[in-house]
Image (cartoon, rainbow, N blue to C red; front, top):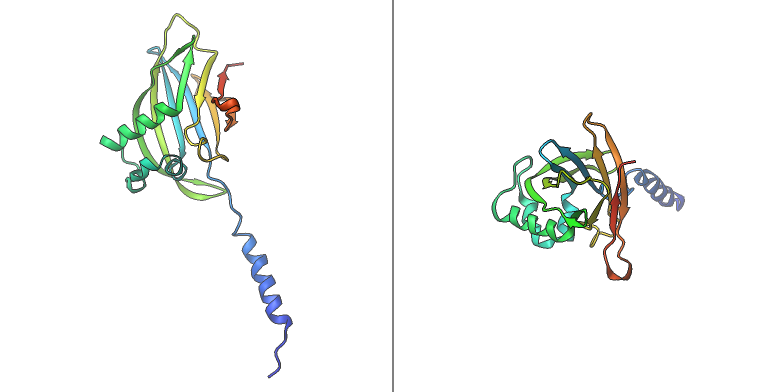
Length: 188
């Protein structure tokens, strides 16, 4: 039996061409922070990012991998998450750090057109502010995921009273001279 040497080459080329449509790798979506002023002189913060990226950045939170979808986190794991967040984010207004409180956290299953379904950590925080001072400009120090996952990005939004989102800034990891960068948040 005579074998045609072209057939294996064509089969391999066909496999490569067909697989490229499905083999595109994309990073998981980055962090999204949405800030909203509440009528009680409180700043509300909604934070979301991929659970898988959080576990890479904070292996001590690996137990989150087994958490139920759409169920509030409780107990020790919530305390660990709170400690982690406080060591990697701060809001500063009038040269004072705002005391940020973790109010709620859960894991949701979400879909992204580039990566498909993934688990998103959704966190609700609050911070009181002095009514006498202007809220903006404010400084944000944030490296929750990006201190370990270097391709991680963050986008910060301001939610106006009419529910419209205004983009304040977007950024990636930077640490010139070993110091984290603070991002100035201003409404234009």
